[in-house]
Length: 168
Image 1 (cartoon, rainbow, N blue to C red):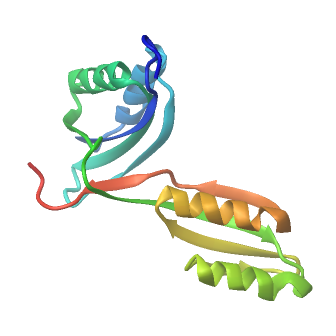
Image 2: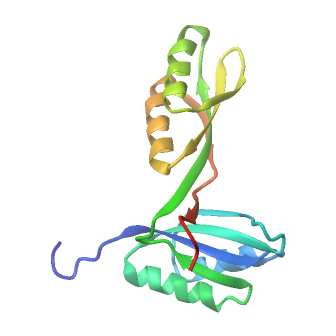
């Protein structure tokens, strides 16, 4: 790396927030107003009905990561911010992929789905909808493998993650 060149990395941040109206808009606005690009953002309830977990993936150098952490920490509705960079985490992405699957190609496509441990959740005369979850790289690889068959539609949840072991 040349002098002055900064390393951009993907950073996974978890924020526990109050489960109430407007919090997501506030956090998204905070990112937007400061020019931070959100690569992935998921929000869901936790074991506590009054608390939601946001899993945020941002791309940038350490300075961007530090600014994101600081800005999130200033939001009143944010209860806790955890930076998962360099930590051992369990992460998953869920995708639904509608693949062009005429009868003559179905067995090939089903074989690929089995290799990736996916599930066929819907089938029509010309298409299959496949459900696949796992690390982002696994989902990315599946998408590339079935792309030659024809992807009609694709939706992904974005990354969800938890630190392994006890939280400190």
